[in-house]
Image 1 (cartoon, rainbow, N blue to C red):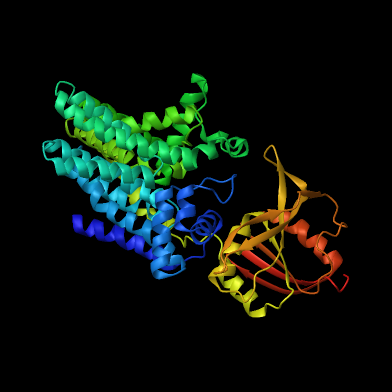
Image 2 (cartoon, rainbow, N blue to C red):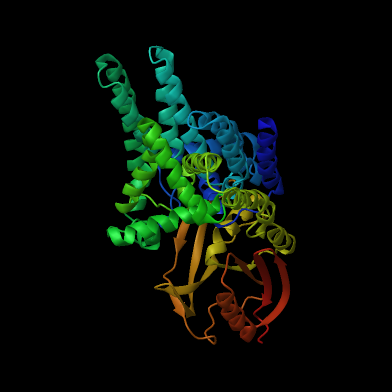
Length: 515
């Protein structure tokens, strides 16, 4: 049974991986980091954009190693997250056995194997699958070392795993801090053992301080990024904080394919109460990272929402199955009428079956924007002197596929167009700037400059020039903004071509022929 569940989890992750979807938005941004930077430049921690988070440096280095060995390809770039997702399956099962009964461990593995968020991010060029992998690795190595701490090689391995975790995963610091607290409390009377552990903790702290100063600290000083992330930071008011936490945990439970979310959230809290009554150490191990992440969120140092807390999925699922175990035990010992007992058991059973059986309906094609086939069309039709205009959110994928598809030449400039949003409301205007990208000898984007932002609120203003071969590329766009751009273009020239794929569209205009 265990091998069947593991095989099912691997098959779902492999199916997503083999779809080989086009890179989109955040993925393309990470890919540009990898392709346009040398190993030394990655280690320096200079971000591609100060407005977006830089992935962990260890994650970028392993990605750079993969493409250096196997070439620039979407599947190569996604190979490391995929491997993390696959290896996390057996690691989670071993982890769950530390806290659960055999039946609960089996049920937890089912949830882990089918969780939509875990399947999805196992084949996305993002560090969230590796966050889960390193969280489980740190826990298991901690247990392994504490089972026989006198073996020096185990402590060295523990130190190395912790340093790697910090390098590859930002939230691993919450896991490492939790395990450090447990080890200090358990060994507070053994001075010699504490000394050896403190040496390990010092190494972790130095590695974390280095990465924090190199990459993460600059991001947290960016007021634009912080303002855009305010919804992911815990409110300081208690009356606002409690419903906020429940809402975000409920959303996260839904991302793990557990429905209805409110029921499984209740089961999680019941399960954690059950864990606390049985072992305070286990309670701290499971809830410690949750509490530390919430504290960091309140301090606006970490975003407590959705994919950023995917590393908490093992702990959340353990709490859920412990709650289910408590409920089933209560029903088993229930002495009231058989009818009431069967109604309660039936309700819980229906919810569990629904969560498991509804997964295939969620397992649609995971692609977001299929820009790659459209860029292949552009490459085939490309002529020297062609002019490009790309919507703001699609520019990273556009720049990546110029190199990935080996365009015969790179544009010296392109127009970047976007919708104007003020205080969450879309405005009836277009934001426009000229980008002047720079490329290395391999044709990969390495940076560049841009003109000042121009706000255009009239469809009669010509911001596109009069080129007879003008490409307009939309990917990850708003329909209203696209409509405003096309209205302007059709006033100025003739549409000569149109190609469409999922989430992406390309238009070809002759702007030298007045409309």
